[in-house]
Image (cartoon, rainbow, N blue to C red):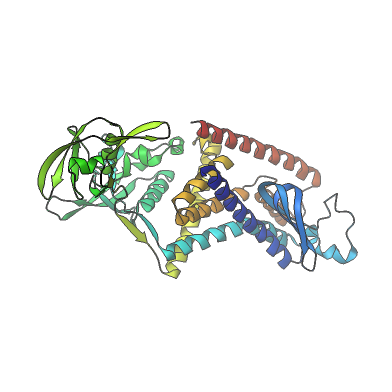
Length: 452
């Protein structure tokens, strides 16, 4: 079931992004008066097609599901045959260079526009996310910066932070730009009041080559988990038989502190069929009780459970914006994501970042499936990010990609003459070689992650 869901989610992501990308090329080509012969979703042999419109454009599905293309009337196409005199003015290379640039650039621009529309819609709808309350590892950069467990981050580098996702994004940007993160946090006090702390987290000391790992972990930060507070006690279970109540706060398991719900659940799962001593607080009074977690099988693993609900989610905040602000935020997020992708690519080229950052279809499919299982908001957010990445990748000045063609046309615009066909053919082969190497690296990384 999980595999099927992953495949379907991947098909939706790739299908939508390819269709939007190629629609950008198609609509601008039509607007510029160029005749479109075929619109294909997929590459290779056509397996299904229908013809529509005044030009009888062929709308097709092709055998290889990755990618797609718009085939225009082009005299360079050896298989097209002679061009009818009435269509000569509608041939692609007969268009002014500015129109050719617009047609080629329209695909990546459509991907950026899709990301903006998705993100703006999500910002207007509101996205429930965990609040930016942190847990700090001892001896870490976060610990050295004076951050403490339970701190609530309210801003990073003067930009307000509402959620855990916004905090992660702000720290990644600071690290990519090799800047420290100036943070403002609220710290709860024993009296019930709050203290405002200003500190500086040394994100500028994280080497670019280390950004392929989990940056937040490298900084020594994690999302703060809620305390081990018992919810509903299921009748007849170990918790009910031991006399545990809803609202009990568990502080220790076998004498070991349980600072949060996660550590409490972990210790119970590690003790199937073995009595454990729980110490906690009930209605302001300390108590202790012995309970024996029931042994249950999860896959190949035996775990202990006491049949009591424990809230693992913690506090959340719904981040929403008015329409104008939502569009502004979406444009800024799309721009920042694009700039970060370009920066990472530059670091890959210069050897400052690891090639492990390059991912392929297997990783994309995995994340598509994971986000689909989480919910439609996570899935759409992921789709927006992939759409931005696709737009940026297609603008790279590599022959075969849109960016390579834009480079040709830019040279033509400044020199007044097109790139010679012989030079273009050599560059196309070189570009194809680069693309194949990148695909091989991506597949190797995907398989390594899968095995790992």
